[in-house]
Amino acid sequence: MTSLPRRRLLGAAAAFPFAGVAFGQALPLTPECGARAAPTPRQTEGPYYTPNTPQRSSLVEPGSKAERLTLTGRVVDAQCRPVAKALLDFWHCDENGEYDNAGFRYRGHLFTDAEGRYRLETIFPALYPGRARHIHVKVQAPGRRILTTQLYFPGDARDSLWRKELEVVMEQRPQGRLAAFQFIVDA
Ligand code: FE
Image 1 (cartoon, protein in one colour):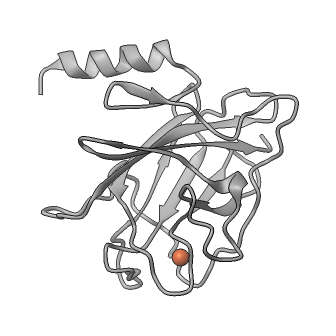
Image 2 (tube, helix red, strand yellow; image 1 turned 30 degrees about the vertical axis):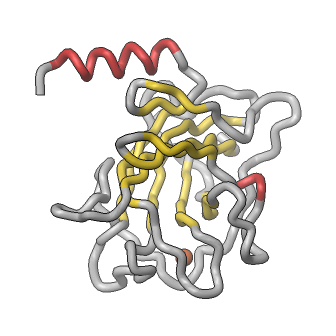
């Protein structure tokens, strides 16, 4: 790849510093930080967390035909200050609703940049029985307590764990789904 598309993306990120940026266009982030901001709610880890995940920004398996999901956003504190080098450790089920409990398929962690931004390339996780569609995540500002929670998809309130405050913004784009979420943490 030449450096030009990358430079264009970085330019878009600079123009929309408070938004999730992917495919050169931004999505609004929710929830908002600031005066009325509540910290991102904690939720159960569930039975399938595996520690020591690989550090990577793409969980897409080679040759996967599954629908792509790009999840972007920021980690900020309640005063909207970006949290740099925050850890985000993601795990979710595959396109058949199965978790890889032996290896690291659809598991990985990354760190936010100096503006608190993150970007994860993955697949749209399947629905599995008894749950709203979700992505598990652990978020940790440097040196602070781990926040374990789950992200949900718009209008998918099909179980008692689903919460509006944990709903991503999502749009269908030609390249796949683009979602955004802003984590508000104690930093
Ligand atoms: Fe789960």
